[in-house]
Length: 441
View (cartoon, rainbow, N blue to C red):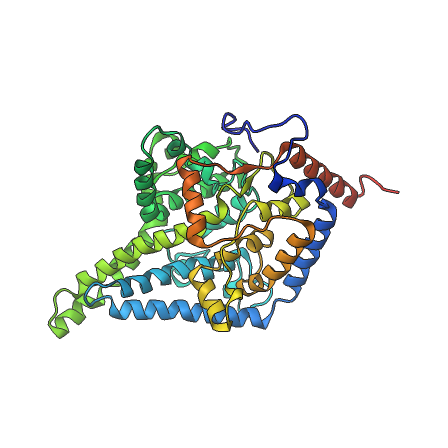
């Protein structure tokens, strides 16, 4: 809901606006029929999940593990980009291809093992985190901020991934654009542990307080502004200390990934007479850390942001017509692997973290990666049927557009207020009808 930074949210219209040429689809858009069709498609996709989805997951896990094995067994040798990339891809895919969809519940109803259930994967103990998904990000914190807060407030001010709000200080700063580009590049290299990890843990702490009945005022601005070097300051210290954050969130990954994992190369180096193997392993892991931050940044950020991506003033009911419409016009896809051959499909999507199906993922967060490949042609067809935009482009083209928004050179679109209210009113009426509060002849 547009209430905190109201100065920057002042895009309102009191009457139905004069639409731009590429927004005239709103005038003839059949909102009710679209809602019915998209719900039917979602139910079909969920009902059809099964062994094929499990086999696809197993293949992606095998590919990720192969990257891990190849990177680990070569990281003691001379520093090279190939080893660093394999280690980077291991971290990247373990998060975005495997953990991302398991934590959403993409395999809850089709995988025979409860390890892949969203209520078990990576959570409940440090051992499960180590075995399933060890990263800078704490799985419980990721589930709270991403699965709930992001997906159910997409492109609203309260959306933790709304880049136009998160970058407001850079956008408004009066300086050379090249200074902004430099800052953005540095942010790309360190964003997971610098920004994302503390922000997610902060939201987790707030959620836990609310869950036990403690009133917590809206802290959207504090959440947007938190950085690792701010943890422990007065405004955050009442929720958690720096030591708590470090020991619970950061230390497991720091110690295991960067200290214990390369330890065998001390003994291997002594055995083969090479004293540089341990340091080579450390260098590869640090190089891979930078690469995986950049890789994840350019695959996550641009399909949530751009001058063709809409943002919204008010919240909407989950799984309502507005929810589905916002998933479509409030996000974008990259080029899709399904446009390639059978082998190339999975490889192309693997390298994109399956985030090239972001529209489909926002529509139905609880589907598997294989189901998104199946869903995309049907979603495109529905967009064509109803005249809806289906934003899609190459990752680097979209990255350029996202950076333009981050620097303040361009901005995201606002859904015209008259239509936003109209669609919300239709949703409210449909919900009342569903509950039997109103009747129609």
